[in-house]
Length: 356
Image (cartoon, rainbow, N blue to C red; front, top):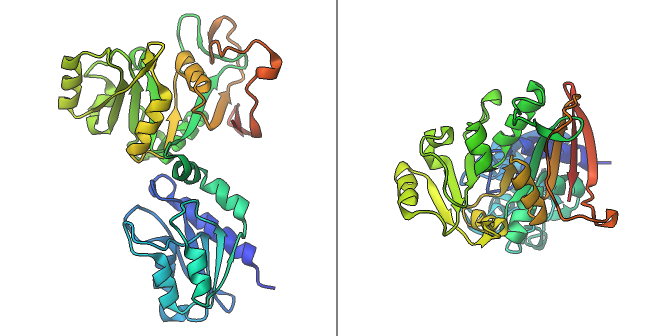
């Protein structure tokens, strides 16, 4: 029996190498196998460059004839930034194509095209694993809005700061390193103006020597100082504001190189759902919210969050700032319940992850 699952696992593992660099494209890995031997492998690294299956087939060369191609996502079948992968597959002479999951993009018909060409084609091997790996791409493709992670670092009693506002650092360096890795993987980070004024954060991924992510600030009145730390790389800054913002300040920030987006307000604050639509237009497919009490609460109330990550340190604060404010919940049957929960130890801290 041919171990399709084994080779698909390899393809999925390869696909992970593109996390943080392939966006707005999906994570894709590919393996070419002939007589039980791997003769080609590849993953999609950067949008505009060769796709995973094309890289794997180029590596295999003429040996690809009558081989089996494994690919974690349905091959593309139309011209985009690169030619259709189905053309390369059909020209290669492979005998069989095994696909992890169907592409949620309705324009992709790779499975049908390959099958119609006479290539033995199968789809759905480790489909659930492939779908989870590409949860960001799936959501963005279907909604044109980013997949939103909400990250919170708290004490054991749910506080994100002391009564005097001290919050650096509640959780351990291990947890902070984990967060920096997340920053390296997502397209952008979102904070509120209160967090910026209080902490003046860099919002980089220096602990893992990662990329410079896009920083987004929700600032309804445009209070952001032009010399804030995030403005050191202004072309990576987006400021979401409202019509309350002064035109002179908008111009000043734009001249520095930052992008300013003027959105509708909701109860005096930036409408987060409108912001998500706008970020989607900028091809921001994933977003890490690192806000304070107000932004955390607004994100949940406006239902923009897909996944929550709560880092909890083994310490008690007592009177302090709660991670969340009033969510309007008065009865237990109205609580926000997480699904598919997982927990892990990060040094001395505990990380709880769950989906909404």
